[in-house]
Length: 350
Image 1 (cartoon, helix red, strand yellow):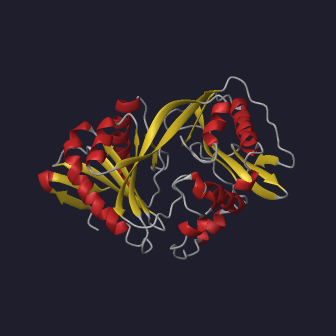
Image 2: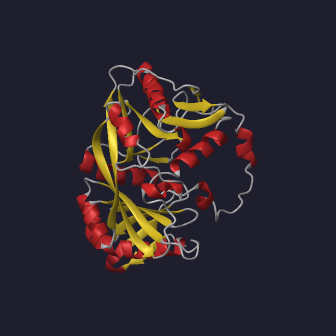
Image 3: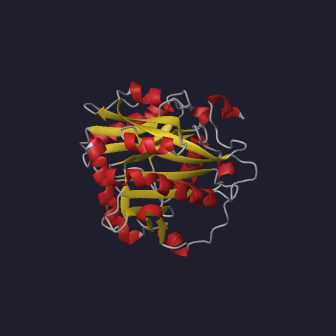
């Protein structure tokens, strides 16, 4: 692909790379400070762009310009096996809103190209998650044929006192060792998150993945002392629940967030289906909150599906978490067919 796409109206979509990290962070933060009063991007010490909503390095990212003006939009496209969902990221400054329809038209064609490896007969959607405060961005999506599909709620907790940790019978909780635990923890997370709205079982997600070459450099690093990342799965803040020698759940937390350096985050809480309803999720959550409190962190955030099938919303409310922000998931069907994803609780046993 060429780096620049020229559209009518002197609109240019310029392919962004690692050298664009500072520009992308400034654009995202100008947008988020206007909407919610905080930054939602930063450039870390390695020069990498960090976003409040994770975007993998393999994503296609485009800066939107009108003529030779400074960029007024940032878009990204992500398509992963089995390619039945193509994710769109859409950050629009006010000066680019009128140009957005033409940009989205080109991006949709690119999304359709990225979705071509999807299985025959599978339904394919183009999906975009927007802050509820972003009325201009949402209006642009709706005009382009996107429709509201789901709501996510962001929670916060003022952690005045550490909660008591009540372990279910036969369950132990310990710190995760990132050098050795990831295979078992990852498998348990795959099983647990397959029960969430819009998710697919591990077999479906990996159906079309190609064998990847072994990365010898990565293998050599597996035995090295892991580096601490305050923004993702921080050392000493990730916990594993076990029973009968098997991993049955985990709670992976971040010591700080992109938006607030003084706030911690429960980034991922998962429990295998067979162990739900026994207090495992509550014990993992209480363990994490106890460690946050011990570190002097007095505000903890997390997020979850407002109508989730696994009870996470109710669990967080029991611990005293309260909503502070909402995000909306919008989708546009770009190919009809059989829905691979789980869309209702009744499908959990299919």
